[in-house]
Length: 394
Figure 1 (cartoon, one colour):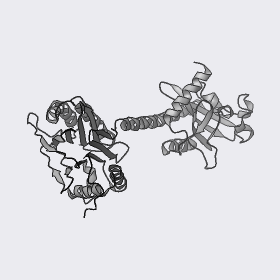
Figure 2 (cartoon, one colour):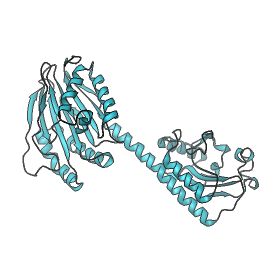
Figure 3 (cartoon, helix red, strand yellow):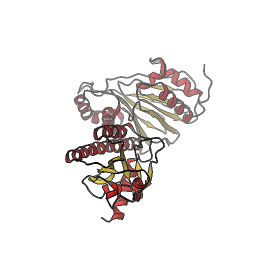
Figure 4 (tube, one colour):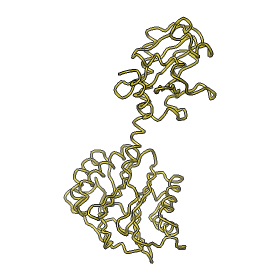
């Protein structure tokens, strides 16, 4: 690989990390803070190097410049080899004597170790600097390598975190219109990722949609939710009762092994007729909002996935979404937006009917959830034809 190719590779990897222009992060600050103590140096940095610039992730003062040309840096030497680069006296080394760090900042000692990701590609350095020349023992070099591995793991955590969010975002369905039926949703995770699942698809003009709520939060719950999504998507052309019957054995096995369970609302809607077939596995947080009349809460008729006895048949219910009607389905985190009881669903309906549009309603839920919720919040809304939005109900 040529030097230019290496530079382009570094640039691509640095861009993927998405931390070069971010505010200083504690996971990097902690490393350099401890490195300064351990090695007794005034300056320590975690740096990234792209094709042209060096970016420091850990400025030692608020006024310090955080990026500059690679050719001005000591670290251009460090990324050229896998072993630590040690310069005991920068004024006595032809490679460094004319660098701005020496001539303008008075740096007399440098030690750096390359940071690699993606199978060993160097993307940056962990380095130490001092204003006095000094020796650096083999034991200190070994310790510097250990600090470098720590910094690599911190970079990898950031990459995995960003990739996780990217994947989670990619799996979120976009608002959709099928015939005279419009479906949209809002999802506000309590942490970075949600244990709630909402999904929909259209096959032969029939809309299949799902909301599931896995016990727990963050990545473990999100992993189980992804499994539920995949399991039900395999059977999305079946009616809800058959789809759940086909997917549940494997899903329940995973949930039981993980000591978890999940509530589920899985339904199919025929846009031409408005007929909705539903399997509700312990969810019970759905409201049929009629165009002119009181909301009707749909009752759950079964235990959650992971708690339902194998071999016991589930039941389904059917209702009609008439023109002007809506269906609101929520995860239990929405109860944090009210008094914690099922009455919160009726408050949600009133908010919905007062909203100027579905988008306004979903944004209202998002803002309230961000402020008040202590759990993942997901709300899915189906509207059929002209609705009663904008009503000033009491």
